[in-house]
Length: 461
Ligand SMILES: [Zn+2]
Image 1 (tube, helix red, strand yellow):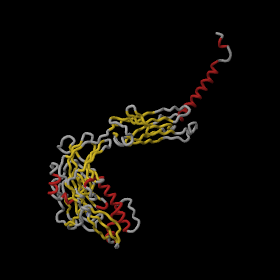
Image 2 (spheres, rainbow, N blue to C red):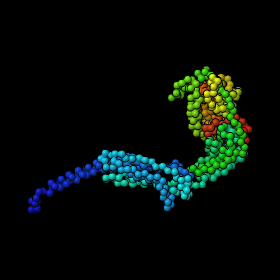
Image 3 (cartoon, rainbow, N blue to C red):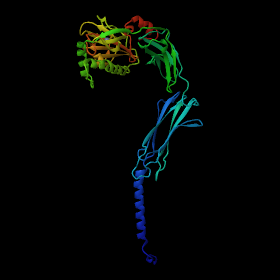
Image 4 (tube, rainbow, N blue to C red):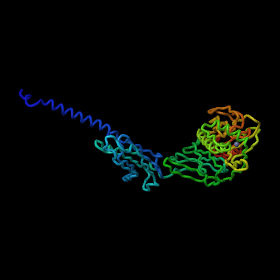
């Protein structure tokens, strides 16, 4: 066995090689861990689940470790592929041992639909988002492709009107019964900018729906009152349907603001409104309550109004609080005057009913209490859901005897009248809402109106 006597033992040289390899590998691992990072993350979101005239799509790309290289958004239908948007990022910092400037995330947005791509056909379309990482030593592109399929629908949903004789009054309410096609996901009545959505008609056939709608007090053009149906691609059909429109323009009214009134209402509301800006004079603060706080309160009412049951909870005409006199009415445009000068304009949208002080306030009809408590300009208030978007509100109460969630019978006592909130003297402010829009309470107090306009179109329980 002479061989081991030749030269130096090879094991020592091998040791150095192994050490070198380990060192290089170690450096590569450290470098790689610093430089490689994950593949880009890509998410596609679309504004709607389908494509019609215009659907906004957005692709969000991110690679927070080493940055993005090229990102692209494409649209594919059949053999056709078009680039909707593309961005390429410079390799700044790619060779730097500490990472320099790079783009960790970006969004590409585009509009997909007939308004942007006239060639689109009914069927399906693919939105494709592609992302490469920033390349560099030891860093591959690691391309990621994400696709989202969307249905293409170009024909608006079909609908037909089943009810007849739609006579409506400006500021009033109305009912229509419709049958909508299978692609409709939303339907109802649009009156100007106010939409009232439909509900499935109880006991009706397929696609049969019922809508209780508001005619805004501001609207004087019956052609702007239309049935509508929309599909999930945003295709929409509309059709005027009102047979007779009775104009009922708002009345003008003048309300004098006295210092004693301001001194009563302003501190009471300011102290109960968190974050209230109590700077300036009592008048300044009053104008803030009558403007900003009023708008916030109405937004809150709209929010509460969404909590409605799709059934008729009410029976028969609504009842006016007994032994009361009607004071201010619905849709009165008020000019607020202080020391002889006009300082504000707002519209009164309820019915003011005056009785004796702290009189018992009964529910105008059966329903479910959806709000009970402090409601700024309305003071202590109760809101009752009567179903299908119809609600009544009782404001300025001195005490409230019910809680949210209570089911109340017609005539059940809700509390006592008072002058809380923006009220000068003791009275009840009764307001009626259809899907959060104030409507005239007078119609709902009228048995004949209910028979002719609601019971004639839809079967009441
Ligand atoms: Zn009032």
